[in-house]
Amino acid sequence: MNLPLMALVRQNFPGEHIKNIEEQVLCQLQGVGLPNRIQAGQKIGITAGSRGITDIVEILQTVVKAVKATGAYPVLIPSMGSHGGGTTEGQLAILHKLGIDTKSVGAQIWPETNTTVVGYIENNIPIHVNKAALECDGVIVINRVKPHTSFHGPVESGIHKMIAVGLGGPSGAEAIHRQGAPALPKLIPAMATEIMQHINLIMGLAIIENSYEKTRKIAAVLPEELADKEGTLLEDARRTMPSLPLTDIDLLIIDQMGKNFSGTGMDTNIIGRLRIQGLPEPESPRIKRIAVLDLSSETDGNANGIGLADFTTRRLVDKINFPATYKNNITSTFTQRAMIPITMDNDREVVSTALKSIGLVNPGQARVVRVRNTLHLAEIQVSESIMEEVLSVPHVELIGNPAPMQFDGVRPPT
Image 1 (cartoon, rainbow, N blue to C red):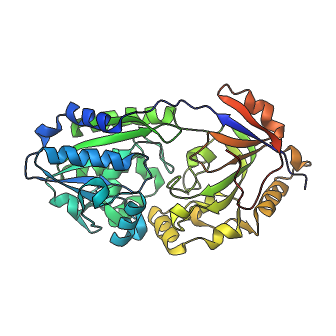
Image 2: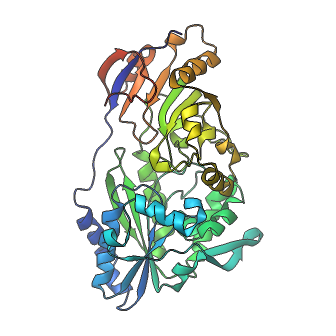
Image 3: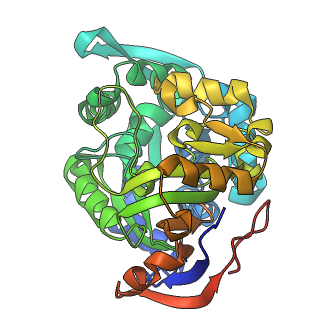
């Protein structure tokens, strides 16, 4: 098959970021009066999630130091819903991979996946709360704020979700997701509001990253301000998230997927696919075929989101940890996202077959984009047929002339 030549281009996204993380965290904590909100001798829980937040270790270190300076006793509470197989061991392993342990952050980790039902909200949905959080004198909730990959609403991924799903543990995550994706925009903030009646939420610490995974903003938010301020932070994050430089694509090739790039393996905001029963598909971008070639080592075999692709390789499928993938997927109830795509023996066969399936007379003229993953979109490859169109976008520049595709584990040059 006459495969298209691919040119390497660079997207120059805004790169503003915080130079001194510790200084900014301390500034935010002082700004909301942390020393006046906790007392010496109190046990203060600090949430530690499963997302790959770039500066999370330094942020946790700084919060721990600030709590200790008041004479209080900080402990880290793993807060990640059903991730890590929903087990204490699995969640501690995730934190370890993120560089989060007692030595690195300066505080003991209180691993607890058991929850207490503290009440019910509409339709008799149980409100689960991590037992460790209930036993603390106060809780500081830390999370990155960003658009969610399964729903859109006033708040999405952020502080409310960490309270409702993270502190809800495996049982809470299951109870929430069982209601279906259409209910999540209303249910998550409602659940978080109820949980705040049972824990002493000292504050939320919201993190926004730029398109290069560098921390752009850190904001401390008091409980009484959370409902209003998190929505504003979400819109800020949405404006500066990375994206593809065009919306009509015949074939998107993704070199790697994994939960270190997105909770769904491939960010649905980038690929324009949800595949959730009861929800309409996004109008943009319009991508006819998606081929994913490999699974990252960091995801530990969790291939949640593989069903968002149309084609994949035998290499990827052989790496899947099906129990972990199914646990994550069944908890969310989005079963289509775990279905295995058409599987080919190697990268070239995947790309050739995907192009054939589009029905183009000349596949060499196809509109093809190739990315390393859906998180790192600064340098991507585009087919020669759309190079001029892509280069007309103001923030895009050519850094590599059109050349034949490389396959089977060979990454595009960077």
